[in-house]
Image (cartoon, rainbow, N blue to C red; front, side):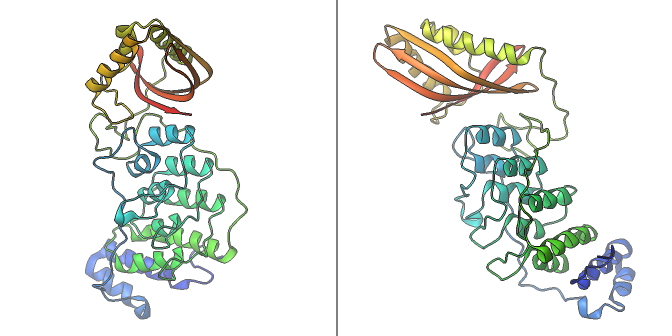
Length: 356
């Protein structure tokens, strides 16, 4: 395939023509129309861009996989994946019906989240309520600097460029339509993506190969996070992990379990950060009062942690383990996940999730 043309879609030349508009204004428009008359389409008032994903302003905490992807929250995406989060779950919000976490990550242009989801086994061909795959959604938005890498990751994961949405369009067709009718100052960058879509449509899906996620910044969102206490700057460098971080996290876990077993309520609660958010949605003060009541009301408690796995990145850590709890009134074995922040050199719990 020649570097300047598509072997089947030569009419992508309109993209180069539109570059003249961006660079030279009205004169560029006149130049662009010369020799390309059939490819210049008039403004179409019935053209409506696809709904863009947004971070939910409210919802259950800690964030589920869908909300974490919608907010560009890489740390919680990785945490939910580690917990076995459902990669097929879809967004219940009406404008976004049927979209998976991968749809959201691709539309946002969050390359690291895309790679993490694909590495975990997300389906690159999953369709939303309008029949759009993740590749369709990428085609119907302004170009971003990570687009080529995202498209390549989707293709390597087995994405099928021949799929058609409810309008009967492939990703390439949608790209052409969006590039022609949208007011997008980055039209010039569409040609490279167009060539990739064209090749994917011509060849069909590749045999999926494992996607290796980039070494992402855990605990740092790759996009705007509008919730209080969870904002992060994507441009800030990742903080270095404290020396001996993994062993210090393990020590904090053991101290937490020991305080619980000793029914030392103050020491137990001291292991939770001031911004800890209970998984059941209670206010933290209500949760603290309930914990005091339950721990104080037991005559004996024994907590043991086994199969402990710890991931540390910067000042954030995720710990997963098997918790064997025994008291005079209850015996239970649970799989538990704790998310911890390093606060003034001490690891404090900010999230706690339990599963059977």
